[in-house]
Image (cartoon, rainbow, N blue to C red; front, side, top):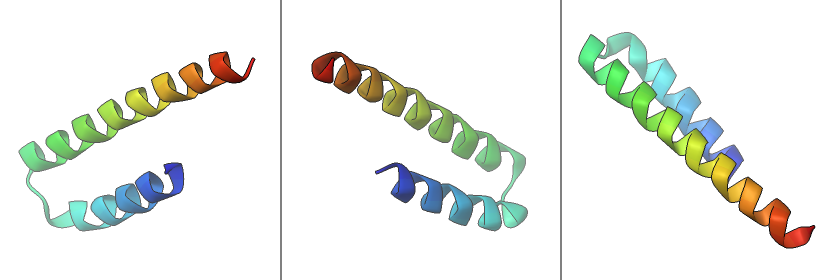
Length: 50
């Protein structure tokens, strides 16, 4: 899942050269939120496996 997110992020960043400032900020916000969610899921899994 992390690999898929990374690939999508790279694709969006490449396209970012043509995006408006507002759109870039929206993309970065979405990426940050996704990263936070992944972190919470990782923490939950770690607790289950501990």
